[in-house]
Length: 593
Image (cartoon, rainbow, N blue to C red; front, top):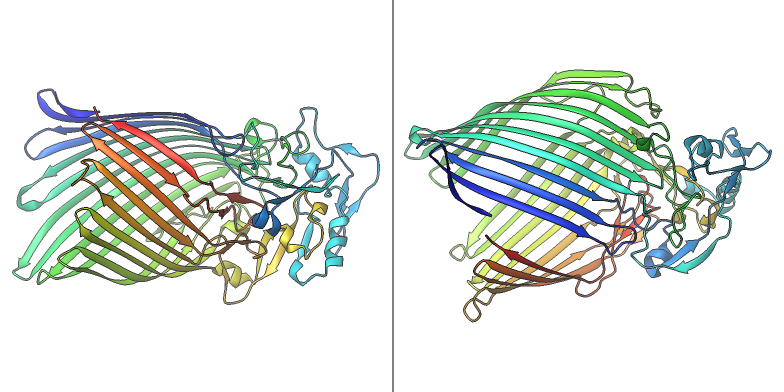
């Protein structure tokens, strides 16, 4: 709802928006509840000064969808799934000596794996060594099947109790009824815009946001975040006509951002494969969660940071045809954070206190920020009196990410690629667009160290029965070429063609679209043991609009293509894969007040 009004005798424009969703899903145990309320205003204070301000609130409750577990190439190709229950008891084990560090059972009476509440605690998982302490394969691609099997059998707690096979559908996924993903977000902004003489403009933008997030998964991952941020930007824009053939548009100003955060997550015992997804979740697979006070966090951090910045941008035009865009930004970053005592961080993670200050590049001793450099060159053209547009560019981007799981997530990657896009307006009724991307992303961190840690999937076992390890998780280290390794989960090429049609000359308000997208194959995980097939998607839609009413009808995946997305490709890519939606339909209606 939008319209004009007045406030204290001043002209006011307003826009109000509300949305409520309560929906099921194609995937099992998945439900979405969401409420969005938004109000925005534009107040004319004087002939040269006006203000834009507004608020938004969002409530969201759903769940994370990990996808299929116990992934094999047979599961991807024809839906054949390995069934079987994890063991209900365990024998305590310790780690043996080099070179393979086998698991050494300690004997004694078997102990129940679940506690009195039907949950597997970190203590029980550690005593059974369901993690990677002794469940480890060094370069399994160089090991013999016999050596792999011997290492897996050294821990009697890993094997399934009764393995078999079954055919599963794409909606049968690793989601328990108690899994939850929730957000409460409050956002507010207040901008003042002054239009001065000679085309100059002064803008002050203020922004506030509060986020309360929770993420809990029965297979063993939980996380929460409570954070708020305030940011203020002051910008001045002016046009400087130097002479008849040279003009410059300048944009410059300072900014300040403060953020306070309280964050915790628990990933010490993520066991994707313990649950047989043909059966409900239960005491054989459900883990204690730190966010519910049932166990320790892996990391639990509180802190705050301040970012003081100054930016300058100049857009210079020569002879009204050649443009040169230059700019510079300087940031002073100050961060302080501390690890809380209810956590058991991995070795090498940031310690009890961390802080840092540095100009030019954002920095903190706890490595909580990221860095990126981009080199890009391209060309654009408009032809046929503006009816045909085309652009092509080549880019190289290097990015460094920092996160808690620093052994794997703190990667430096380099992306190299070519992008092409085009748009052809044939006539007022027909428009055709197209795009093509060819890109390769390399893991430079893995190349520098010569190895990469990842969790083992069935495809890494050289034919050994994976049911021998599905009761826990098995880690591995793979050798990496000095030239780098391709990032998993990303197709090398993507191509799309879109056709937009308007039937206005014959049926006013009727339009349609047809979109075709093709993706090349991709490997699910770092070890390239599981190959996700190439696919072509076909989407079609119709829209009818008349007055304040509009109706949209869409068919997604019209050809019912079978395709997949890699989940957590660096760590668990060979273990979990998300089957994407089959053919589905969307019908929506809109009424403008």
